Image 1 (spheres, rainbow, N blue to C red):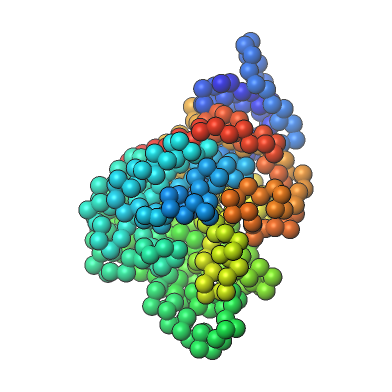
Image 2: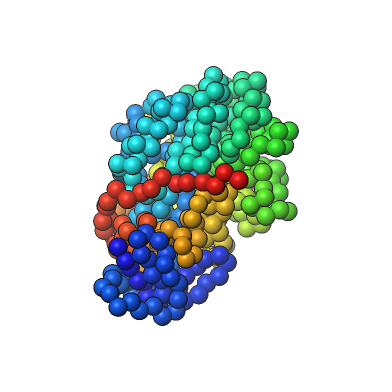
Length: 445
């Protein structure tokens, strides 16, 4: 399997340059302005396109096993590669919850058969499974996930002794969902008494408030500092939380890192009037001030990576009354083009997008041989036309749930091709699917 992409504009490692690129046996073999080989290879004209490293999404919920009416590994990884995402890390709040090594390995076996993208799965932490958590192999598992606030499922870890033990004993990265449960419960009762049946999605950021987020995030940061734990806080949603993070050391040396999600960079509380439950996420989408502060924290390197928190639910589920409608929505197919829209608006550069969606996840998680366009690295890349407008509609949505919070949005950029391990998985609107994804591997240093 060999491919040459000719005359493409490569965005990589804070540089943009024109070159040819040659893949052989799943590896980037050569990057050079003029590549010719004597034997027959697949050739693609890259004129007018940019080439990015494959995106590494460190937070998805692909819903398998147990919740496959919402999405599954095959359907959602197909949508991911159509959006330029070539590697994903999936969360443990499936059914059953991923709380044992046996259940964790079963998910890897499913992905080996079904995933079109490269994959890793978090080991789930509960209040009573510390022994299982500590058995996790840091060389082939991305991390341990702790729900320090309840979200979809029942994996809340609220026992201070348990948290203390996990933070003090885990040798590997701990990823946390941070919202203070007591604050949320108090706010829920308060707003139910105030609004009753009129309670709706616009109240979501008041219930799952800035205070709830900051109390939990600051608690996690203090625990990590106490034990020098490798902590990664997911989906930062408030301006106040950005103050918890540092930008005075290189990412490779950071012990405490954080993530921003597409929906917190795109939407704000003004959008609840038109989008309602379709932008109901945990943590909640908050104010325009919060949205701008999260982007500024990304640009200043206080926040390290961009992810999706892709979390599909059926249309029927999302159309239930606010308190019954589950939180989360599908995003992997539209994450890159949404960020490229912010590039067109002058808010972020192409180099910064590549940093936060490709390079930084690889550095943050110590992923082996991915995340950069570099000779000897895996041939995971996407090619994008920055000037090919298209509108999101039900007819072009690939998520199993069949809807998107971006329906009706016109994006200026379009993903044209995606390669996973050198295989041309997505070709100008057509999925050429094969079970080609590989298990991500990690350096243990």
